[in-house]
Length: 205
Ligand SMILES: [Zn+2]
Image 1 (cartoon, helix red, strand yellow):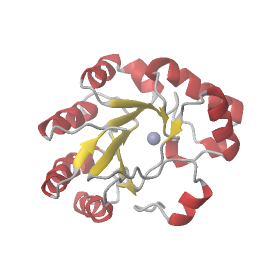
Image 2 (cartoon, rainbow, N blue to C red):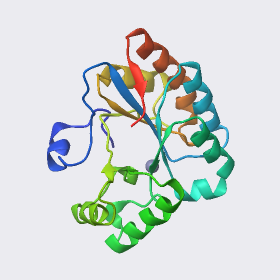
Image 3 (cartoon, helix red, strand yellow):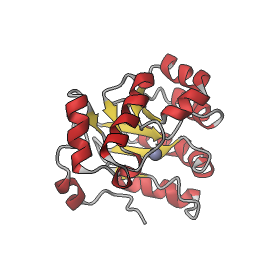
Image 4 (cartoon, rainbow, N blue to C red):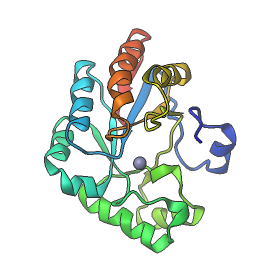
């Protein structure tokens, strides 16, 4: 089970993580987790281009290793790249040392000061370890979870969810993964069109 809108109590438990990025204009921050992979990431890049939108991609190191050409394209298009660990480890189930090593292994490829913990699960001890090893690292959570990974969710409902909860400064999560593609392919162009009409500006983190 997941919540589209991040509840306030979760933000209170982890106040040092970034959930929403307030600004003095209508900027929103679209993010894509779990790529890069052919077809899906290419679709996202092409769609963003139509709307002149910048976004942030939290990449799995092992997918960069498998698809270096897609990763190269992401870099060339000028989007932000973030760390999503090398093997998509769930922090709550992972030893701290193993978790940190996996972040370092991904870091050697992405060289980024942005980290999104896979599944949003990271222990407080792991947050401390990350901050020791990477003092400049920002840990990025989210304001709106699209649910695009949920194969029981219809594309229409997924679109309604993201539109309903998006507000200035929102950090929005999508997935450039095969699992999410049925919904993403439908939702992304429509959401971008809707947000553009509302006067939102698409920024990278
Ligand atoms: Zn992920």
